[in-house]
Length: 158
Image (cartoon, rainbow, N blue to C red; front, side, top):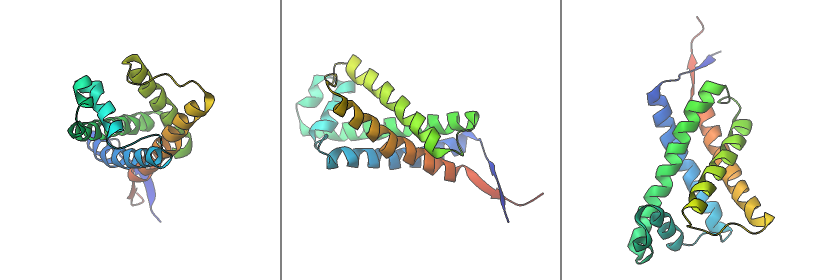
């Protein structure tokens, strides 16, 4: 029977974070599109406008920039989670770690989006709840779950 140890190398954080970020970005985006909170290409144009300004809203070609930014943010967040979870011991607890990660990610993204004036503040608990659910269930927990499996390598008994 194999026992497991974690390998806290920068290479593993990066590799695992890239895959986990793509997974989380796909699930998060799919959820928002399915429930009707996001529309292509408008949603991604708005994301691109956070970096490029109002020019991104003028043509749908900027949606590709928004997609790249969306996944870039998801990957960076997943890499940071991989490192932080390893250091705090949450790597083996994907539900707890993913919930905390999802709430923190939601708070950071809200702060950026609302500070830049890219969206209006939510006016009811339903809208706030949907955002938190999306970040926790469709981003935080899947990223944490993947990384909890990825970061464990079987090693022989010594």
